[in-house]
Length: 119
Image (cartoon, rainbow, N blue to C red; front, side, top):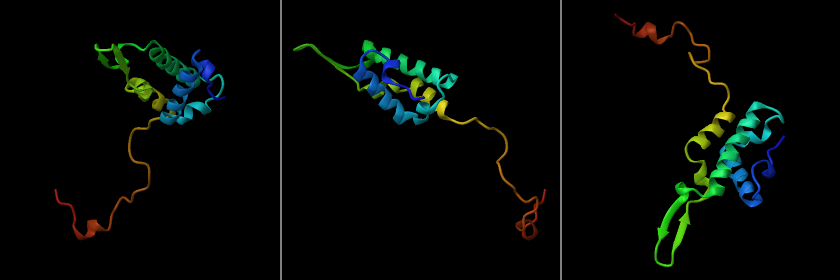
């Protein structure tokens, strides 16, 4: 079941923009099963990003002016910098494997006959 804007927040335009950026970062989050833990985790990440943007905290101030008093904010995609981006991508990553390379490799190679290893 796909994640919808009303599951993210009350400001429809902002929630939709958060979803579009999230789709660019980790497209697989929109294919999770309705009651899966991964879907709930993705929703939690997206809601936190939405709340942070909605509050326009200090971290989003790009510049301030005193003459004619103005504040410029960074773009919304910057809200995903760092941990939220890594967390969403981790949800899409398959199980991590460790160990040896997968494949079949011959025990003896033809080159060993030409240049034998000497210890």
